[in-house]
Length: 286
Image 1 (cartoon, rainbow, N blue to C red):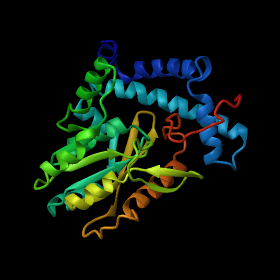
Image 2 (image 1 turned 90 degrees about the vertical axis):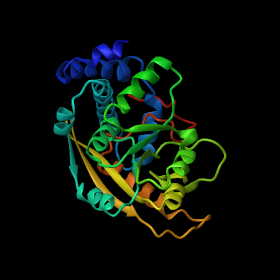
Image 3 (image 1 turned 180 degrees about the horizontal axis):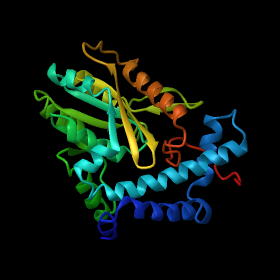
Image 4 (image 1 turned 135 degrees about the vertical axis):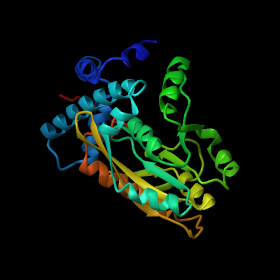
C-alpha cells in the first residue's frame, strides 16, 4: 500500500510532505478546526484569540509531523529510533523489573505515542503488551498492527484486555495503555475536573493494577525538537493497594499527570479527538 512505500523515504522528505498535509488539513479541509478551537478556548480561557490561533496552528503542524513519523516507524531501524527517543529516569523501570514487578504504563496522546511504545519495547527486558482497538479499514489495520509489533511488543484487543491479564497473572509483564480518550459504554468511570471541564476517565487500568499487583508508571512523551523526543518515567502508584469501589485514586493521579503534561506542552496533545461532547464547536474561527 502507499504507506508502505512512503515508509521507505527518509524523514527529511517525509517532513516536506508533512507541510503539505498541514496546509490541507488546516486551511483547505479545515479538519475539525471548530472542535479544536472550542477545546482550546475552554482549556485556556486566559489566552487571547491570537494566542489560541498560534497554538492551533502549531498543533496541526505537530500532528502532521507525527503522521509522517508514524509512517516512517514501519521502516525505522532500532539504532535510529534509539537516537530519536531518549529516556529519562529509565532506572526506575530497571528497579521494578529487578523486584519482579509487573508494570502498567499509562501515557497520553501527546508527543509521538507510537514511537514511545516501540522504543520502550526495545529497551524493556520483560514482555510488553499494548492495548489495541482494531481499525475498521483492514489494510490500515494491518499496517498499524505490523508497525506496532515490529520490535517484539504484542497487542491485545481492548475487548480481550482483562481476559489476557487474568491469563498472564503469574507472569511478569508490562502493559501499555493510553487512557486519555473518552470512555465508551455505560460502565463505571472516574469523573474529575480536567482542562476546565467535568471529564470521565477509564478505571480499567486501576482495576488491572490492583488485580495484577502491578506498579503504575506514568510516561511523559515530550518533543524536544523536530523528530526528537524524550520519555520520562514517574511511579504514581505501587502495591499494596486498598480496594475502594467509590474512589479511584490512581485514575485521579493519572488525570492530574496528563493535565500537567498538557499544560507544559499544549501543542502536542490530540485536541482534535472528540474527548467531550461539545455543542458549539461550529463557531467561526479565523
